[in-house]
Amino acid sequence: AAAVAPPADATPATLLRLASLAAPFGVGLAGLPPAGEPSQQAAQVRALVRRIAEEARAPGTAAPVAECALLYSADADLWSGGRHRHAVALAAAALAAHHVQAPVVTRLSDAPAGAAVVLADAAGLTAQEARALTRRLEAGAGILTFGEPSQVDEAGHALGPFLPAAKAGGVRAGAGTVAQLPALVRERGAAPVDEALLEKALAALLGKGRRAVGVTGRARLSATLWRLGEAVDVHLVAPGGERAQGHTLFVGLHLAGGHRKARFRSAEGGDVEIRLNPSLSSVSTILPAFSGYAVLSLGG
Image (cartoon, rainbow, N blue to C red; front, side, top):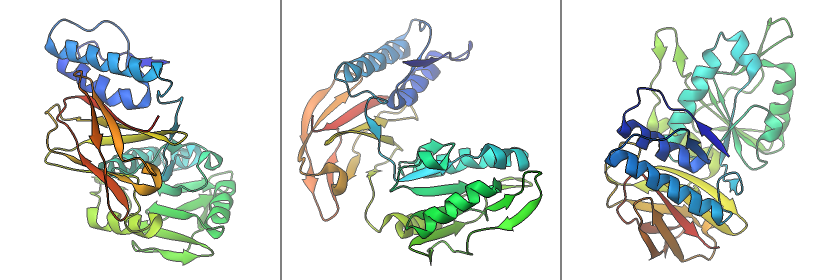
């Protein structure tokens, strides 16, 4: 179990938001919340987290669904003066906004075999990391780069790029595909991500229409998937604090399998069975309204 201590001056509404955002990753909040309605809602989030854990489906017990793996290199961060770490955070936010399941790994060996590797402003990778990435690409993996990755020797001397020149739509390299987007961090601050180009790159690397999850609606929702055998849990958060209503959820058929019904539970106490409607590449459903945090369970 893991918990974080929130800022001492955090408001009850901030505590609710932090509790909801942390729940899909099995992280709780330390300390007792102050009195008030938002604190009661935070307690409801904790209660739902406990129920999921009691069913042995808690994040950490289950395995994360990984479409991409975002590589953080301590060496690249050192030689870039912290630019790489900043870019990794920006890339993670951009991918999450598109509901891409992309855990961060600190070693390429920890990236799942079928996941595309994402490199964010990775100037200063070690020669060993460069060789491992090249081998993975030639063996059939996908690589998405923000900016042009480069390698250095042990003293930090530049050895230049090591991947073929690419574009957003991707180019073939060996049995794999590499797609490149503009760098995320510039001298005058962060550069905005071109949403259309990012979608184009994801389609080239993951397959057009083959996505793990998607959510449409007026307000933004975050979705985090965990898998336990044939069962899949979709952890949903309304990070803006507004009530989520009228959203449509899509789950890829390669994850949903033959499941056509799901159990929807919200921190507010809702617990209903809903039907999943199959289409060519996914199953979909209109989510019941909820605030804060909810879990949709397929199977199990």
